[in-house]
Length: 502
Image (cartoon, rainbow, N blue to C red; front, side, top):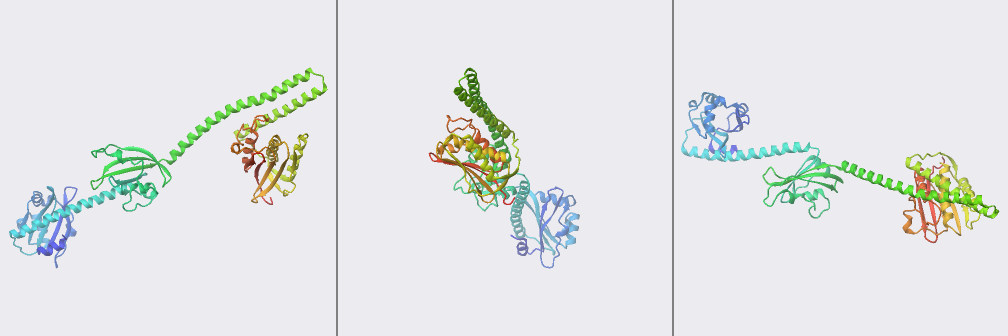
C-alpha cells in the first residue's frame, strides 16, 4: 500500500517511514508523504543520532506505541524537532519483523488531533502491513545488491563461471568471461545447450549426480577436464552444489582455460615419441648400413684376392668389373649416408645459379646413356619441353633426376625411359621421369619415400635415395610424388619454383 494512499485514507498531514542505519548509532527518514500545503521535511531528517532522542528511541525498540496530542510531553529534542515541522499531534508505531526492530512509522498531524481506540487500532494494522512490505523490500533490495556485488566480483575473475538450477539445469547466472566466450545466455537456456552446440540431450559427462547425495546433502567439489566444441578449447572444471541467493540448490561450475597447457603436453608427448622414433630409426639405420656396407666391401675384398691369384685375362676382366661395380655401389652408399647426416643436422645448403633446364636434362640423359651401354631400354629426353631458365641449385636437381633415372633403369627391362618437364601454374616447373617398367603396387605407394623402403629386395640399393630426394625437393621449395600402375610403369615427378622473366 503506497504512503499517499495511507495518508489520504487516515487524514494525516505527514506520513513517514524511518529506518535504523547499519552503523547502530544513527537512523533516518527514508520515505515521506505530505498532504496539500505541508512542507516536506525529509531532506534534514535523513540522518539523526539515536543518542539525541534516546528515550523516544528506547520506547519504540521495546515495541511500545507513542501516541499523543501534546508534543510537549515528549523528550525535549523530539519536541523541538516536531515544533519546526508544525506538528501538533503524533502517533508512532514500531516496525519489526520476527521480533527484530528495524524502524518506525510516524503519523503527523498539524492540528490537535484527539485519538480514540479505533484510530490506534487502524494505524497499528497499517504499521504491521508497512512493516512486512518494508522488510520484503529490504530483503529484495539486499538480494539485488548482493547479486550486483557478486556479479561484479565474478565478472573480474579470469575464469568462466556459470550457475544452473540443480533440478532443471537452466542457467541462472553467467559471468562476463563466460558470456564473451560462449555468447549471451538466452532466457531459460539449459547449460548443456550453451556448452555443447547441437546436443539434443544433456551432456554424458554431467557432474550433477556427483554433487548431492540421496538426501540432497553436499558431497564436495568435483574436478574434471573437458574439451568444449563451441569454443574449441580445453578447460579444467570445478563443479559443486551451492545454495543460490533465493535458497534453491544450484550447480556452480568454474572453468579455467588450459588449452595452452594441453598443447604443451601434446607437444611434449610428440617430442618424446619423436625422440623414441629417432632412436629407433638410428638403431635401424646402423643395422641396415652395417649390412649394406659389408656387402660391397666383402665383394671388393673377395674379388681383389681372386685378381691376385689368377693370370687368366678373361677372369681378371670379370673380377675387375665386379670390383669396379661394388666400388661404385660403396661410393654411392657413403654419399647417401653423408647426405642423410646433413639433412638431419639441417645443413643442406643450396648453391643457387641460373640453370638452363633443357641443357641440364640433355646432360643428365647423356651421362646415363653412357652408363647403360648394354641395356635394351631406350633412354630419351622429350625435346618438346619448353625452353626455360630457372634460379636453382643445379647439382641438387641433377641428384634428384639421377636417382629417378637410376631407379627407372633398375625396374625397366624393355621399352623406354623419358625425362621431361612442363610449366605448372606459371610458378612451378614439374620434372618427370616416366618409364615402362614393372610399376608399383598401390599398397606400397604411400611408403615409397620412406627410408630403407625397397620394392625389390633382390635389387641393389639401401633404400635411401628417394627419402633423400624428398628432403632435397622440400628444401628447394617444391613437392615430390609418384604416379604408377602395376605392370604398366611409373612416373616419378617433383616441382621447383619458377619466376617468369627472372
